[in-house]
Length: 143
Image 1 (cartoon, rainbow, N blue to C red):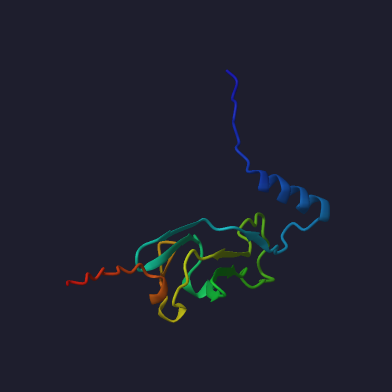
Image 2: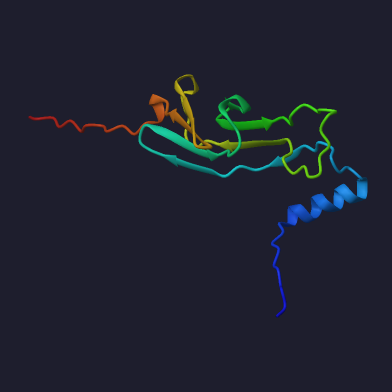
């Protein structure tokens, strides 16, 4: 009986292996830039953005709002190089991401709230009063 094994390899692994072998960078720290998945929705009172950032903590993430553009940035540093360690396999590298999105409504950045739970960042951005839906009552004149 033939013993067949199937190995699934991500395209990025093939490229990383090629670079490691071509430039002989095996064992060196490499900065990888990646995207994060984002969901954004709007309610009557706020814009909510959820971003997946597994492997990061709130200390690794920076959130800014400028000109109605929300930017989420994260960076994890490699552990310090230790001369007493001889790596045989090193796949856990430094990673960073940066993602900017234009918000669908003007928001009050001063009242924004962000939380981080189970690798998901949730940012709640209250809409400015001027963009919240308003109901205008119709007055009738009685004669």
